[in-house]
Image 1: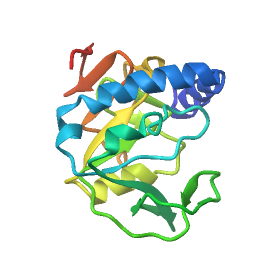
Image 2: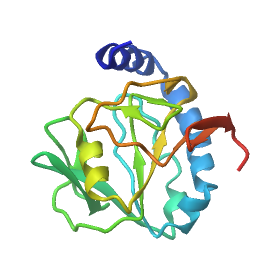
Image 3: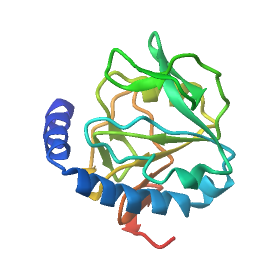
Length: 184
């Protein structure tokens, strides 16, 4: 399947999730993230503001209690990690972001996506913001978070696509191109 077809298919499927399904799965996903050794070691984490039934990294805000928390703010063709604080405004893409920006250096980036593959590639909304960010910040560890159903065998990567370090869903951890049942 082409990227555009995968994007349409998985967005349609994700849009059909109920609030209860999003909440329940997000709790499980973020519990798994909270047990990840790299997450535990990280001092500064950038999470995203969920849209269109994305797995919600805010579902249990307590997991970040000992960390500096940031969210992305778009600036031209890039995103930058800004300290998470009010006030927030809705961007041109319909995503909440800080009004001002106290830019933060981060250790870990939790990355959203429309679908992911076992080789650690992802399809997002097609604007390339996370790929450009991760390409510029090679020392930032990246974990894609998603629902089990968003994981496919293969996505044909393009030259600009950046491979994640890990993917965590409700029941799987994918690291190094292999998939196994979660046992944190």
